[in-house]
Image 1 (cartoon, rainbow, N blue to C red):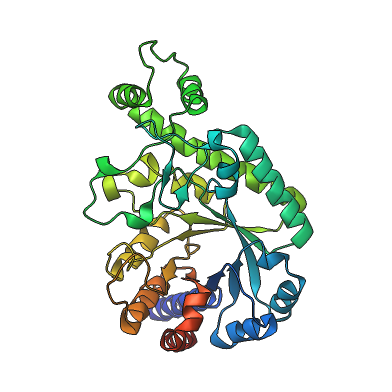
Image 2 (image 1 turned 135 degrees about the vertical axis):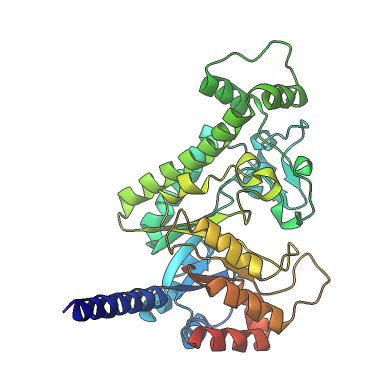
Length: 361
């Protein structure tokens, strides 16, 4: 009798595990990012469906297009609108006082990466209102918040980078005043420059500074989510995450980017680390490592984004290397994969066929 009971328990466990595994595979997001497109949108969407793409992360411009929305809906492809937050080049060009300020007292910009101060309430309110209105007018399945962090040009940060070489923001009057209120202390009168302010913070309150930086980002996400759910309660939320593990660069995911994954996870349905391994000179296995660590806070809802084309590098990016990246991205406990971006994939027929083959397995 005991043997029969043991056998039944084993059988039940196998069946349950099989169902869980099957459900996990069936529920994976196979996504693609696209920012602009001028061709036949019906053919585009049918191509996605043919190769196994079930989700599109598109610019606001594309998701404002009635035909684009019509074809994605007819083909059961979920739509997420990509919404850059603190990166807003147009706003910064019109008003340079919006810039975040680095610990060196300079505007937060490097090459094309330009960031707004994360304490600027007027800017945040305008951005939230824009997102609310977009959701109301265009009814996407989800929002995908990008540049929802502090300033850092992470795309050019390689494994051998020194933590102290990374920028720290923001040191304008709004942020420092907010930090002092957060601490309930008064900044010494002798501190008059961002350099001296940062030195004082590092010596006395660095852990609290990191908490404060993260709280600015987390609270902004919370506010966005609360507002869009008033418009559409069932809307999905994805967050673009800097692809750093907690120990990388002495905890830079928090103390530089201000992204506290545990805190952010409670306000999102998915988190999507931008694991562009070829760009940042990492091996494909690193993608799985990032996904696995972040999965601790977002069970099977981490969807790593992988790069398709060669960017910021002259090194060859072969079909074989790309395929390895996709395989690593799809490994358990991944919630799927997002390809960055469609134009690069469409232009490389070999990589396109590799995607078709890998997704069909």
